[in-house]
Image (cartoon, rainbow, N blue to C red):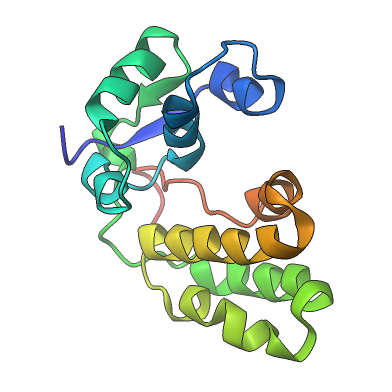
Length: 153
C-alpha cells in the first residue's frame, strides 16, 4: 500500500466543508492531506499516525478512491509547473509582498507534481498563520496541480 495514491471523491471534497460524516479529528486530517499526488508513504512521512486505519475508514465512507496507476506519475518531471508558478506568485503577492519569492521558492524549484504540491502545503501552513486554516485552504486549493493523465506529456 505504500506506493498507492488516493484522491478525494466529490463526497470527500464536500466533507471538507460540510463535516457531515462526523469524522474523528485524525481521520479528517488524513482526508485533508490526501491530494491525489502524494503516495501513502509520502503521507506517512508527514507524520500521519495510524494512516492505514484512517484510509480504510475514508474508503469505506467513499470519501477517497485510488488513483489509477497510469495517473500516478509523481516521480516524473511535470511541464505544467512553470505556468502554475506564475499563478502561485500572483496569488501570494498580496499576502507576502516582497517576500513572495522567498515563500514560493520551494514551488519554483519543484520539478515533479508531488514536490510542487508539497510546497503548496507548506505555503498553506504559512498562510494559515495570517488568514486562518480554512481561508488558507481556500486560497491554496486552486494552486495545486492535479495528477497528470497517462495521455499527457
